[in-house]
Image (cartoon, rainbow, N blue to C red; front, side):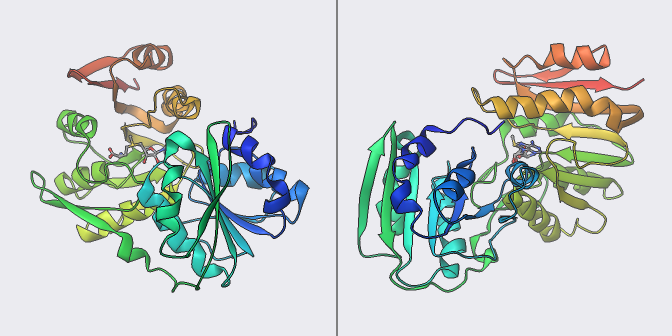
Length: 341
Ligand SMILES: C[S@@+](CC[C@H](N)C(=O)[O-])C[C@H]1O[C@@H](n2cnc3c(N)ncnc32)[C@H](O)[C@@H]1O
């Protein structure tokens, strides 16, 4: 899954002499075995990831210096940030990691030129007087700065943003990089409109900021809701959303890569699953959900999901359940449902 080196790592491979001068704390858009490449060239890095799947993959590969969560506890002699997709997430990661370094420590930022790495000088301005571009190749760039002063440890709650959902009288709490940052996604809205009364145990698959769980619990506080996601910041946002609306009493929120860490069976699985045209891993997650959901449903239980209309999910649902009902459609999304007989 993460085997091939990304073009960013290929560019970093030309700079191993500089990068391997000190053990680095590595974080951000980790999509390959860059930690092993660094460990081969010099001192083993410390890895911090908010992605549960990457965390597990590193652990399974025998790499133990890896932390999963909302912020790291272990520092190193320098930082290498791989530019994440959202600039706010890059700001967050710098604020989370830099307090663990010493003054004078090197800070490297690397990323795809199309992925916002050019904002590295701006991102580093609060922490350093000078930012140098060290390399640019394979449509990727590497910047370096020196930490002028060790910043104060960040407070996670300072990063939480809120927005109201007027229809349901809910407050949604989000963190950098979490889906549905400023408004309810129109796909999630269409899905919620189709969901009638539910019962028993309900799984919110890929919970993001917890909008689906919060809406369902607001309607039916008696539901036994479980919320899963691979993103630590999404899980924390969900916890914050549920707490802000006093809906957290009997809800479980935990990390799971697709259904892999889920146990037992549910009356309903609801999902606005990850989509990202062209990114194979996202497609695999939903494929896994559609193929495996049956095993996690009680007799009479249902799987309901919303997806971009062009995605080939009806065929996959039919293959798994023997049928697939389209409950709603608009110009962009469709809501599908299948039941276990
Ligand atoms: C389209 S968003 C939906 C978020 C939220 N349910 C909503 O409606 O706003 C999909 C979510 O799936 C999560 N996700 C991605 N891959 C996953 C995986 N393998 N297992 C579980 N969740 C995953 C993402 O982190 C993201 O929060």
